[in-house]
Image 1: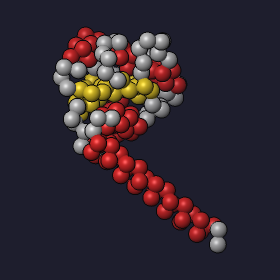
Image 2: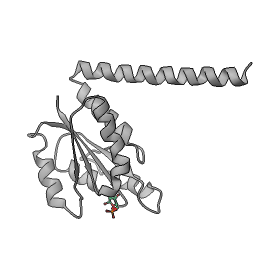
Image 3: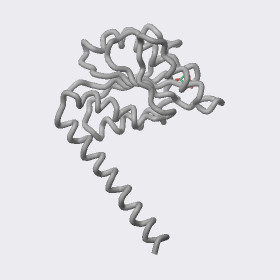
Length: 164
Ligand code: RP5
């Protein structure tokens, strides 16, 4: 199976990013986690990204806050799919990170999830790998069925409390 790279701009992003790592682990998807900053360690970010396809990665998740150019800078160095997580790490409630990550000019796409949307970033990475992995696709189906069952149970509990 291809690996997923999980890159964050600062270790202060880890409380958010760890949810992506946890989800990848739940699905048995191998991942590598790094702190590479687009402005503090741009050379390391570039070297890792340029080698990522040869090093058996299938997808890259990049999380950053504030002027969050990390995902775009990484996407510029690879044709692997890049998923951006805008991290809420400033006084602007994450709107700065969201716009910095999502508003990529035409030509270099970044698939951006919600502010602090680390779990969805991991699920999207898994869905990308599952295009060519039927076993992984089946795990995704099971996970969705479990989520459906949970909501149906919640509906039953709420309905029986208020509708009788
Ligand atoms: C970004 O600036 C990081 O991704 C982080 O979200 C934010 C703050 O970084 P630190 O000052 O906490 O290292 O580059």
